[in-house]
Length: 227
Image (cartoon, rainbow, N blue to C red; front, side, top):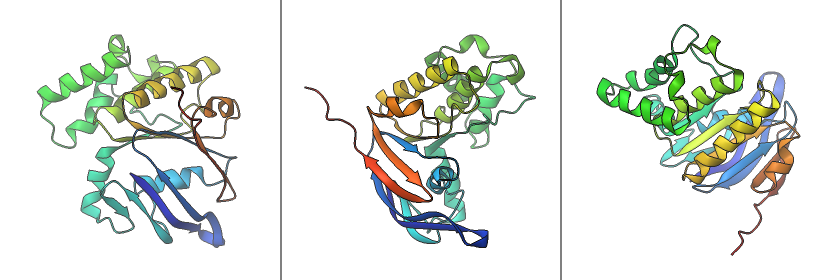
């Protein structure tokens, strides 16, 4: 489903963010990308939704290939890859409904369908009562849930989460993790990057790829399923 093949990415001053990375991510899996700050986690995720292009190698995301994807195809890729950021990236002057509906409006989705889709995703996240709230009226955990709702409303086949609990208290972090588990249980592939050591124990139930200085230093498969 997602293939990293001989990926190398170097920034200015010859700083190599990723060095000959190779791994595959299977459909419906939950994968942790762990490592200290600066280890290459965010760079790796950006290659999935074509915010960056590798210097060597390629990333295959479903039917798309980076490099090789044309400019007009990038929006099609990003409609299929939901992305969640540490800093939420919500529009502060727009309500919850407006934040979520915006990603559908820009693709020409009819307003009637948008209304139904927003209502559905908020109901799934138990946030219907926040429909007309603004981001400043929400806790950090609630803002991240709205960001997740925005990513999910387009029914992506993979959800990429870049340090999604970095700006949230421990209780909110646990809620976000449980929500990602629920989303994954519904069939969506989840790739979560974190440097939070408290997640290492949680990651033991899933595949864990550890990065350090741009290299994969460990790739631990999930434990075998019981039964």
